[in-house]
Length: 433
Image (tube, rainbow, N blue to C red; front, top):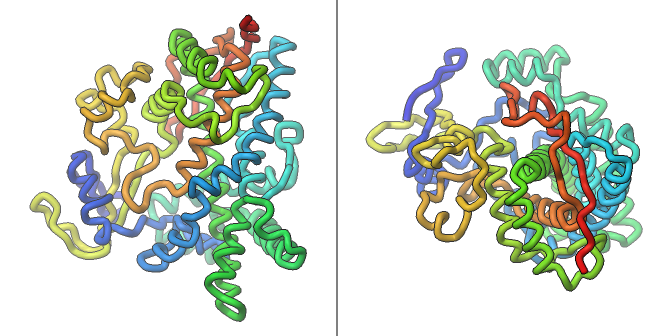
C-alpha cells in the first residue's frame, strides 16, 4: 500500500492481493463507489459507471438479468450473424493474400455486434465503416482527450470547462444516441415488438414495465435506458476488440498453441460439419484450451490498466485508517506483470490457466474484469463473442506473421494499443479427410 497525489488530491494504491480482496469483496459496502472523474450530461449521467451507492445497486439489479445464461443464449444469434459477416470479409482477404491489421478489423466487427446485441440494428461497419451509428459511437469511445486528461488530473477544472461548453463527449453524439434510443423504445412499445428482438433494449423495456407505469418515474427509466446504452458501447467496444486482436496476434506468434487450439476445435466441433459453419452458444461451451489462450492474452494485455474505488465510510485496512472520500487505485496491469506472481510474465503461456495452476494462485492475481459485486457486468457476453469469433476463424484459417508483424509488442504509453499495429496474414487450413 502506498500513497499517490495528483494535483493535491491524494489516493491510495494497493498491490497487496489480500487488501485488494478486502476492498472489492469483504468490505465492499465501504468501497461501493467508483471515482467519477468526468461528468456526463443528462441523460448519460445515469450510467453504471457514474452512479453511487443504493442508486447504483438498484440499476445494477435491473440490468443484470440481461446477461443471464438464458438471455445470452438468445442474444447469441446476433453474435453468430456478425461472425458470418466477418467470415466473408476474412475469406476475401485470405484469397487476395492481404495483410490484416487486427485491431482495425476486429473493432469494426465488434461495433456491428454491439449494434445488434444492444439495439437490434444491422449497421454493417465491416462494409461501411462510415455509417452514422459507428461515426457517433466512436465519438463516445474516442472522446475529447484534453478534457479527459484534465478530468483525470484535476477534476474541478474539468467541471469548470464544462460550464464553458467544453465537454468530454461530443454533444452531437449525445443527441444522436438519445434520440435514437428514445425512438427505438417508442417504436417497440407501439408495435408490440418488445421482447422479440432479444437484445439489450428489450430487457430495458421489461424492467420499465415492472417498475413503473408512467409519469416522471417513467422518464427516469428512459434516461436510465440511454445511460446504460452508453455503457454498452463504451465497455463492449474496446474490451472485446482488444482481447480478440491480441489473442489472434499471440497465437500467430506461437503456432504450437494455435495448433493445440485447432485440434480442440476439430475434436469438439466436429458435429458442426463444414468449417464455414459458425458455432453457437452451446457449441463453444467447454472449449477449455481456447479459454486458456484468451485468459493469458487478457493477462498480458488487460483492456483496463487499473481499477478504482472510493471509500464511502471511514475504515481501517491493515492498521491504516482510510478516510471517507479517499480514492483507492488497483494497478491491474502492474499486478498482471508482477514476476513474483507470474514467472516470466512477458511470455505467452496459456498453461498458466490450467485448473491446477489457477487453484494454486491467489484469485486476485488476475482481474481483467475486476472482482466482487462491481465487476464487469458484460463479462459473460464479451467472452461469448470472443469464443464464437475465435472458434470460427481458427477452424477455417491459420493466422501467421507477415512482413509488417512487430513482436514483442510496443504499447502506447496511455492505453492498450500497439504502436506498430497488430499485423498478420491468413492461410486457408488444409481440408481434413
